[in-house]
Amino acid sequence: MENKAAVGEIVRLTSADQASVYAFLAASPIENVMLMGLILEEGLQNHIYREWIGYREGKRLLAVACISGDISIYAPEERAIAPIAEYALRRVPLVPRIISRKETVDRFFEVFKRVDLPVLFDRHQLVYTLDPGQLIQRASAPVRPARVDEALQVARLASAMSYEEIQMDPLADHGQGYVQLIEDRIRRQRYFVLEEQGVLKFQVQLNSITPYAGQITGVYTPPEFRGQGYGTRGMAEFCRLAFTIVPRLCLFVNDFNLPARKVYEHLGFRQCMEYRAIFMQEPIQA
Image 1 (cartoon, one colour):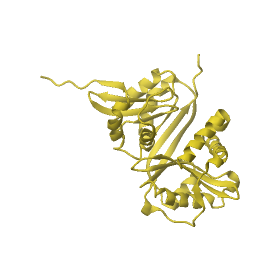
Image 2 (cartoon, helix red, strand yellow):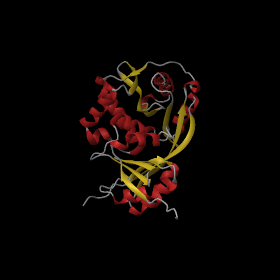
Image 3 (tube, rainbow, N blue to C red):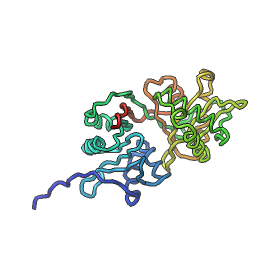
Image 4 (tube, helix red, strand yellow):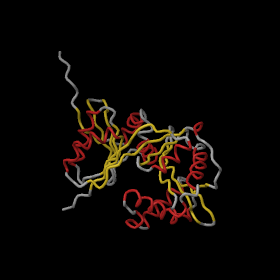
């Protein structure tokens, strides 16, 4: 009897799939640090703001995608990317932002660009990793976990960084809700700051935590304190503290951000892969 190839299908993933999905993602733990961290923190849950989907051929899982404010995909086999993109095109509401490994986004966008929305930006991000033995120690700095009473200061700097990078100001857009989100992250001891005389001169977030790695985001020095060593010393001390929590660190940085890349490389970070982020204009709702 002739064997027929398994027919591929898009499936909605649920909590019953959590263990198998997590194991699938763990095959590339740096690439998937955000998705794995999200599952560990919140479980594999679908709700109005987030949807988990997969692409299967028979019982074999070939791709996982999380659709929320943006779309993140892990698809080690290229043929699974286009079906995810086709699903995303039909989805209501349409999410016009994709952030994943460069090769995945390249293939996804071949399909997704049919939506014909203006591209606001298309950026390449380099992924760096750091192991404890690679950290080049610098002069120590008084970096510590942020306090809840500093939430507004932290939110202001985080929002300023967002505006610098992607022209989005979450504090202006979401107000107290954004501050409460920052408070929650502070309570989880995810934000670290370098403070002098009540002024935050450097801050960083340990965003996603898995047994494999911790993802660094939100590295920010206010413009008036740049060029004075706060970023380099702050990052060095933060990494030392973070290695008491996770066995490895990773971060994503825009390829054109040469000052930041120089700091990371001087501290011992090494590039391991490339991401790509495409943000298109939000469609006009009828």
